[in-house]
Image (cartoon, rainbow, N blue to C red; front, side, top):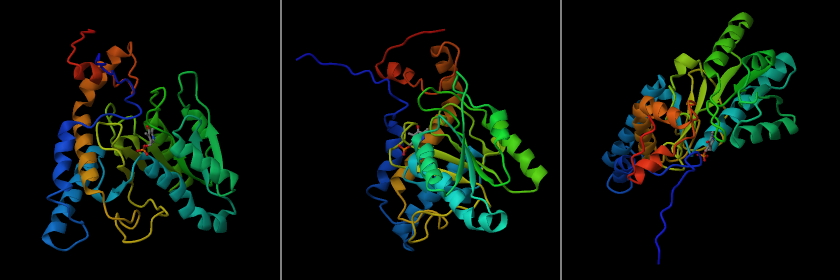
Length: 310
Ligand SMILES: *Cc1c(COP(=O)(O)O)cnc(C)c1O
């Protein structure tokens, strides 16, 4: 029988696990299997691992440790942001302004953002503005600003798109939001960005971009599947989905996925360390465009081929 070599060109859907990530995760399936909430040595070791991972991710985002909430992936992080934020503020907003929470998003968001927002809009739980994109798939900052209203609680625009790779002007949107808040003397709107497709290529610093909530997942950056995180800026309130043991500052109850969390931090540290070199390489492959999904250079390396594009 002839053997077939598979060339995998779908890294925007998911990436293989980096062997260094697997190595970091392995002890937490077996020897260090503890529950981080247990007060004995075995539990403490798991707790330390989660705490180290949280510290690593916080440092890479320019955030504080307590602002990182671990979740089951990109979908949960997105849902938590776009459902949890409007829900938390709905009652007070109705009492004060007699208005529903207003949310602004784009037409090309991942379904984990768009679908819950559309469903909430239909149920009259929120008021929704969906801004369009230009022929490159880019949102216009002016369109976003023009949609601001006194009851706008959240703007959710992804950092990089999962289908066409367009990078959105998140920093510019962040600056406009700060200006609006200052002029109106309000804490709203908050800015959420889904950065699942950006982790390997872009600077994720939340201070530079003025982002208040940021979605990450493991499966798009050579990390494990079924693990994600939501950065939640201090002071931003969210109504949780899972109620129970009070883990993750009461925002996400449930025993922590310790191996997944360790793997997420390791994967993010590895891709962020390489991001400038990797972006430059992919820019050449993309004919001068950094298209964030061009992970196929990885495949060429993996096959042991050396192609010189320079
Ligand atoms: C893959 C992806 C998600 C969903 O993440 P899961 O971990 O599969 O839940 C959300 N947003 C973007 C941009 C993605 O690429």
